[in-house]
Picture 1: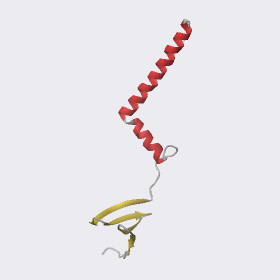
Picture 2: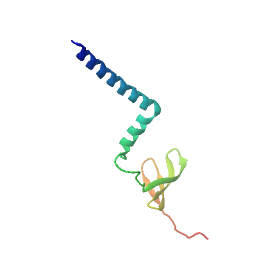
Picture 3: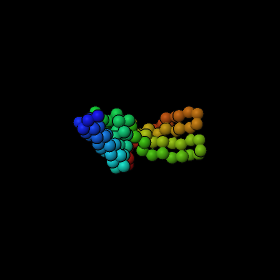
Picture 4: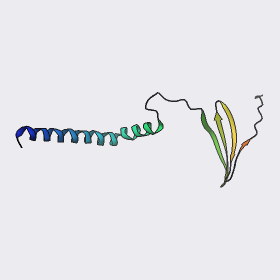
Length: 97
């Protein structure tokens, strides 16, 4: 083992330790968790995707049932969620007076 080989080993060790340090810094600052969450949502290639559906309000009726108001493409629907079935509640569209 000559001096050139020893210098290569030390340089490689410095590069590996530097990369580990950057990874630790990214994990500590939250960059790594944010990057992994972005990958899992599939948003890495494009911009922020427009969502078509959102939960407007939720009301628990009893331990087994709840009513949820969901907005889908600008229209609101009320859903009755139960332990065994889901029901779309009828909606009467009246203009506000």
